[in-house]
Image (cartoon, rainbow over all chains, first blue to last red; front, side, top):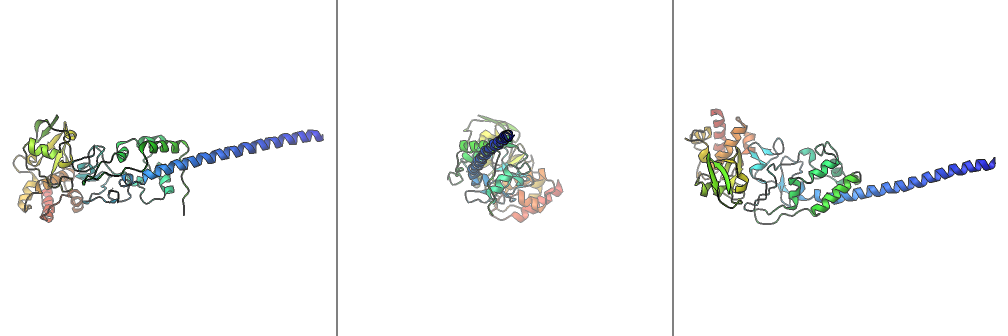
Length: 199
Length: 149
C-alpha cells in the first residue's frame, strides 16, 4: 500500500516537476522573444524619429522641413486630406524625384503627408510603438502590410533624400535601410512587442 | 526626347530630361510670359498647369511632363477673356507685374477647383510672393472673378 501510494505520489510529483521545468523553459523562451522584439523596435525607432520621417508624420496642420524640423516655409498646409491646400497641393512643387536644380525633394507623383492618425511627433517610444501596430492608427495595416509600407517610395526616399536648395545633402536616417527593414521584419515576427512606458 | 503639348500645340523637345520645364517653356516654346523668380519653387512666379494642376515649373524636370499637357499664361484664354484676366485688369492688380502671370495661373487653378473660394481658401492656395505687395488686390480680383465666372 505504502509502495503503491509512494509510486503514485512519485509519478504525480514527477509530472508536476516535468510541467514546472517545461513551464520555466517556455517562460524563459517567451522572455527572450519579447526582448528580441523590443530590441528590434528600438532599432526601428531610430529611423522613425529621424527628421526624414517625422517631418511628414506630424500632428500639426502643416508639414515640417529640414533637420531642425521648422514648419514648412511659405504657409504650406496639410489641407483637407494631407495632400495640401486646394490648388496648392504638395505635388505643386514635389515631384517623383529629387530636383537637383531647385533642391526640392521628390520621390513619388503623390507626395503627401501621413494622415494625422499616423502622426507620432512628440510621442514616447512606447506610445509610438503602440500606434505603429494599432490598425486604427496605422492605416488599417497588419504586420505584413506594415512591412509592405516600408517599401513604398515615400518611405524609401528617406535614404536618398537629395540636397536642399543650398546644395547641402539632407541627412538620411541613422540606420541603413536594409537593417531597418530587417528589424521591422523581426519585430513583426516576434509579436511586435513594445518597450515599457516610462512615467 | 520628350513629347508634350503646350497650350494645345504638340511639341517634341530634344533636351536633357532634367531640364526644368520653365526653360523648355521660355526657350524651346518661346513663351516668355512664365517668369523665373527664384528657381527653388518658393515664389510661384513660374506657375503653369500640367494636366490641369498647378506646378512650379522651375522644379519640374522635362522628363516628368513627357506625354502631358502644359498650359501657360498665354494659353489661359485666346483673347484675355478669362474671368481672372478681366478681373485683374478691372482691379488694376499689377504694379511691376513680374509675379503676376504665376499669380494668375495659381488663382486659375484655385477657381477651377473651388469656384467660390473663401478668404481662407485663398490664403492657403495662393502662396505666390509679390514684392510689390499687391496681395489685397489679388484677393479682391479673385473674389471678383469668382463672381464673374
